[in-house]
Length: 252
Length: 246
Image (tube, rainbow over all chains, first blue to last red):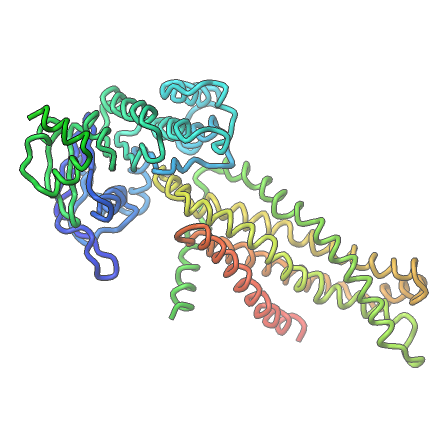
């Protein structure tokens, strides 16, 4: 569980996060949604510690991140997996080496055990074995995302962060990635936080949805409650397309 | 103001670089790759430039010192001392600042803008140490070899002038390059090159590590790395020369 309490964050006097408090539950896919520039990426980067917050608390199962020393933060980060928008795979390494990398850095395993674990993770994300020796540049965007997920779960993290996991993917691959993240969250009982614009994802796997507007939490609920919300900005954002308007009408 | 804050950022980055690696195994895996990439792959340019500069220097020295009062070996002597004192260390390092400096800053800069450095940080890896330490150590280790190689090849370039032209005889040239040889000049040159290797690699890594934005910014970081690295080389050349030869 990650609990964010009353955090503020400014850049050069411009306040991006304003007194944000959110609870991200374990075993659930927590989704942060909102328009571009609403502050959701800053929130995610602040939670991970890539941005230092101005005030407030960020508690990882009771451990307050802003109070931690660099060494403790690095230890905590070994419990964190992250899927980046652009996958952020190391382009000098092969697919298999990318997944082995965190194991080599932090796991006390033999080479064989590492390889076995990497194979397990890659197969878990349904990646074909013939792609294991290829470099990230030689595989498709969807495959890169799967490798990035495999790398993120290699060390069995307690917390999984996904920044726009579906960006640049076709609808079918997006759905596969969504389901994969959802399954992993339940299977490993981890705290997953997803930053997304994709309303299909929200409707598919959103168990705890946080709507962000102007650096503030404007609404929190689940994918069923979202159909009955009386929040104009949220409705404008979620039901912007005709398709989702029809879906809403059907659900009401 | 920017100079002061950049210097502070550079020092703080170096503090993160020069700590024990998380895994020595990973360091020793990266180190030989960097030796090959930054050192061995620089050999062709070192050979080409040194042999030509050695030859040109011999021709120009001979043509500009046509004086019966000067001994015949003076051309070889001047060529040798110029190569040993300045060319093979300072000028070669200025050239390598372009090749190696831009290579390091663009590689690290691209990793920064594609979030690969963020990925390392989130894994709990000290990215500065993991990425930069093998590069600096490999380049500092390789640099004396490159300098000595450049000296040797430069002298061979001068010798070839004697072999293929009538400008100077090989006997006069060989006498000149052996006459009044001061081994301390080689030591001085190597000391300088070690400092320059550190400047080139660390300054380039600094600009790459703090690159921000897109491809244009990576290009800008590379340019800054080469320009500022070169200025620092010239400054430290003056400083070290004053300390060691004055």
